Image 1 (cartoon, rainbow, N blue to C red):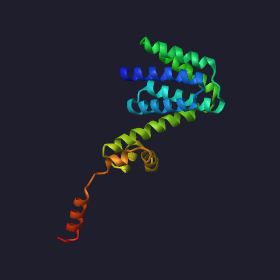
Image 2 (cartoon, one colour):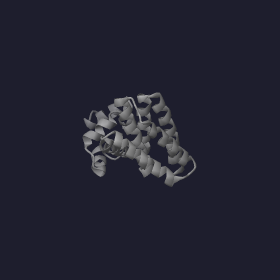
Image 3 (cartoon, rainbow, N blue to C red):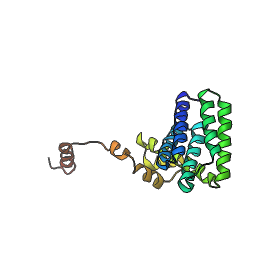
Image 4 (cartoon, helix red, strand yellow):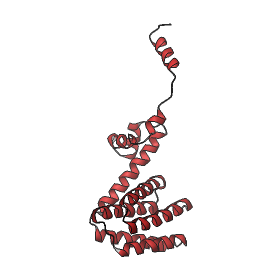
Length: 181
């Protein structure tokens, strides 16, 4: 496991435990967005499973305002095992968490699909940001241009891509284009 990923996941799990104890839905959503972003960058099993769990927990607490105590205990164990570099135990804890969540919420498959779609679209936006056309980027990653445009519209990517051209340069171009010089 990448050390940055490990540290990010530890921080996320600690924040999730605090947010669950406070029943802070907004904080869970923010944490979920952060870890989905990491999952889209690193695309490793650990980031993705953590993103799915956090997203699912945010949805459960949003609807029910209640989380099974065993889930919090498993989160604490997973954090401890990851801090001690015990990846096998950490992975087992994450599997148990996913099983526990799926027993308490039948929509887990939808959450997994949502996280994967979000990660895909975020990755596509990064490719687009590097100058690949919107159509090519959507085609490469197998998403629709509409999905990509909807996401990019909420970012500052279009502003960063637009070339800054002075008014004087624009007027000169128009003069040359129409032969006014």
